[in-house]
Length: 262
Length: 269
Image 1 (cartoon, rainbow over the protein chains, first blue to last red):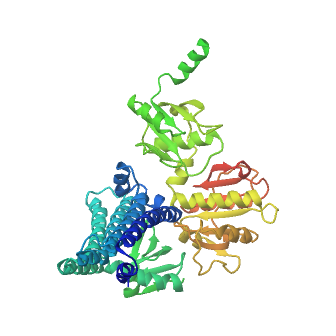
Image 2 (image 1 turned 180 degrees about the vertical axis):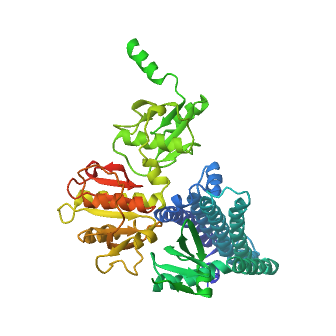
């Protein structure tokens, strides 16, 4: 629909008038871009984006260049609006004969915007996830554990990159296959690693909800006999003279419980 | 002013370590640069100090705070048993305004640190129970003073050494101390006689328990009632600790191993 406009204006007005209209479009474009910039600024600030991204490396890099993430996104939006206005104006005034290039560029513009936006969001989300994961793992002082936050970060950045490239129409089939393999590996390995934990949790849910035995009861599970001290989702603590058995809840299920009443 | 300065020099002379109760990063750094042994004692390790003792509750008086800090530092072996330390604390404001000199060797441990850190129950659980007791002592039940007895940790053994006075209102419930609803619930149930039993992880196992430990050899100050005696006895018989809110004088007391360890006045919080 948009591309009929220049044609219509050129038909209605003379060559000079069309030029005047294109100048007007440019001026309106500047105004519109400014409004978009202001509005995005307010919107992002009200949504608390400024505080949310604080401390991420992306924000710090942005600040080194004298701007911020909020400012960057707002400027980006404004630039795209202004670019759109310039292209519209050029089309109207017919300064360039070859319109096919510009019309293609106009259709491409929103995609470009989404791609850049996705990349920025991905970078920030990656940094944020890395920060929060490393915060969680701070008490674990193992060199191997430090790999995890970085892995999480690059997984998210990879996803964002995939979205961005998909927007730009670059062939991403190979990357998609890589992603699928990665996701499958993750699910498979997690399933394998958490197998016992998951079955203990499922059994623990039943134990906590129905309480076949409770704290203070004397029970025997396998060969371990004692007084129940604690029942939580994953394990049951049983204590007898000076020995505390911590029994996984799935074992309670597979072996059964003997309650000792005497 | 030279007399004052001399007096001050005497106070800080020959110290082995500095205990910082008012952690300010710049002060800590200046001590560190000076190669002085610094131990930070606060509720939170905001300045990433290497030697740190966590305060589980806000002691209102400086003596309680210092006592806890010294016992904590001794337990973690930050200072020797015959060391002389200088404590820098904030008593009237947020900035350091007091200097206290302590000879650790002449100091008799009260076991406050031991109560929190080396008990069966987790420190956060003990703190939460203490908070509930203090809250209850401050407000009472409908304006009237109430008494309460909480037995924390080693719940299995405690349950075996006690019997129910009536149906257990916490049967099949999953309430933990520190849950927001708990204050109200405990306030209502404190009208009932008997003890609350709380597990190591903070689950409220039962209310309305009649404790049946043997009170032999329990040494608590004379003048305290049956509730305190029961509390002292149960901590002697099991590995639990007990926190008691007295109905008559309104104080909160903590027992461990049959001994009175801590006494807190709720009104001062």
